[in-house]
Image: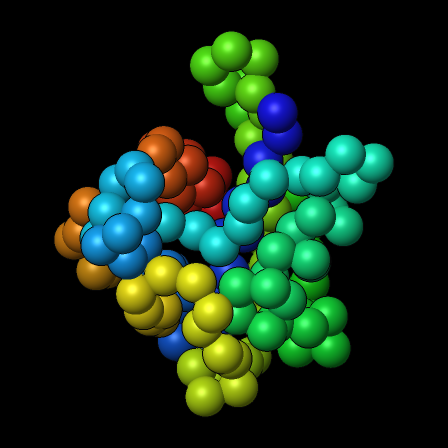
Length: 130
């Protein structure tokens, strides 16, 4: 199984995070990155753009840059691909289709929340590497 996640950054607003809803099968109401499963025959970057379109209606024209920053091996052989995206989109240019809410969070307040999966570790590694 392969997964993609997007560290989405707006230089003026901070990092865009998603809060899972209370019905999520795991980590309800925890914060995470946008992304999901890489489908059969799909490349990770293609999956990322598909997931972003499905989850928040983010299109390539709003993205300034996209770069793979991490490849993590997970339990049972799963692979997680993490991308860093920069964009100038405001929240009102996006449409949340999955989760309870999305929110821009500045770097100072980034870790003042409970994260799902390994997302806190992923974000800390990214921030430390900047």
